[in-house]
Length: 317
Ligand SMILES: NC(=O)c1ccc[n+]([C@@H]2O[C@H](COP(=O)([O-])OP(=O)(O)OC[C@H]3O[C@@H](n4cnc5c(N)ncnc54)[C@H](O)[C@@H]3O)[C@@H](O)[C@H]2O)c1
Image 1 (cartoon, rainbow, N blue to C red):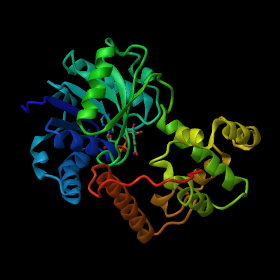
Image 2 (cartoon, helix red, strand yellow):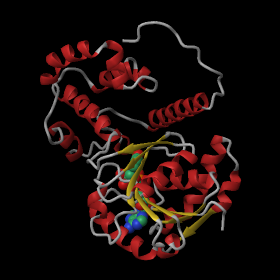
Image 3 (cartoon, rainbow, N blue to C red):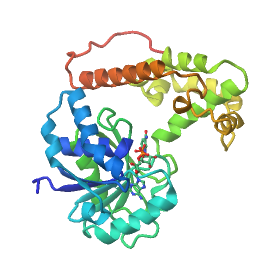
Image 4 (cartoon, rainbow, N blue to C red):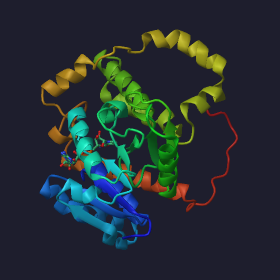
């Protein structure tokens, strides 16, 4: 077995295969389980394509094994990460089986997008070794992994998990309380809720919402977080803006009826050719290519391949 130890990835869809890839690139022996044989069959070729696109060493593939049995995947693993469908009952059952088959010292992590880890792990016998590791898509291009502590997680498990993901070249952050949506998806979906409300209430169309974000604060979000920005403009201005605007922003604690209607009508987005906007195959391919190019360019800049960016003096409100 590889000197770095064994990692088991449970669920080999969009997220699972990418997470498996990152561990394999970093010299872990990775056992991948998926109950769907068609999915399992294609994990290797999907990772191979990614590695080829990224110009990375294909020898990472040699460290992957594909398991038709969950027990086989988790046996001997030091770290188990679950990336199965976003369904609480499914994940609860899955972790019961994982706990029964994994070595007692293995760390058990869920990649759930928004479900509290506490709910997923509540029925387990040893909950001190359980936590959340929330990766972002695509896992090999987006740096962040939110490491979510529960009331039961031991300090040692938390520290080891953060160190592990830092060693993978990721940007792990410690989420101290296990709240639904953690940090990233709470922020992201606060924005999406208002984006949908603006369209629902006829303030502008969907294309305009996207243009406003992409051509304004979206440009600087990767280098200027919201609270850095609040400090930059001043907390006094931030307070004045909030006194005027917060009462006008959507705060309904349920999904927009406009969104409910889209789904009821079968307007499911790119997969049905229409959602908030209309999509044909060329638009979809072009957008995927643009996003991938942008993320790879950001990764190259992070790695310093474009050289140091000189600081530009000025007012970035
Ligand atoms: N898609 C994203 O952008 C994203 C980002 C972060 C987190 N997540 C979360 O990651 C998890 C996986 O999402 P995804 O987008 O990869 O989904 P996906 O549908 O692409 O993949 C899920 C995989 O799980 C497999 N599966 C089904 N039942 C299973 C079981 N009982 N045990 C093991 N595997 C099983 C399916 O065959 C499928 O291959 C979800 O919890 C999701 O919310 C998704």
